[in-house]
Length: 240
Image (cartoon, rainbow, N blue to C red; front, side, top):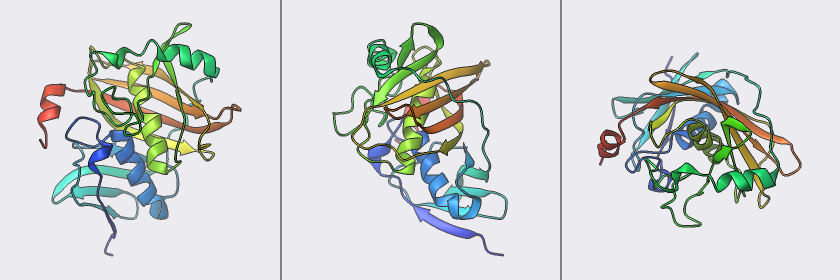
């Protein structure tokens, strides 16, 4: 049987490192495209830096799908997702205070990242500022006012704060694997709270869980992710 194929392209706006796509945006895009084959809950694994402005194809088989750029394997997707508990919510005021402790204002390994890059212009990037919570040393929080609620956008917002639950300034890392459950629409125009918590750390990887909460405390989405340490200088040169 010929696999079901879907083609797509990632706009240059949605970068993580300067020359490749934001991992959460890629995973969310693949999850949305794979939903007809595998359902709304999937796990996406990134194998190579996802190229920008390049035709990609998702080939969905019976049990797994693969994303290619030409002959290069970029990502794979499989049905099902882990279900760790969501990190506990925090009040908006606490998230706003945490933003002032955002470590990425200087020393960000990827300062033009669409989601959390401080060098992005207002209105162009999301400019999330996940900062450490003083009473929860393994957790960060920030606020987000959605102007849209697409699946790739929600995965993006669930992605980067999880990375900041570790220490990407001194130990740069990128997303390696992610699963997410989207439970409610993002409330456009309202201030949401994003919380992420570090679960495990090894020499090369970290695992985190993240969540988006609506202003009334409703859980909008929760994600489980593994990040992999990288040399940012090498990664920035990829596809440059």
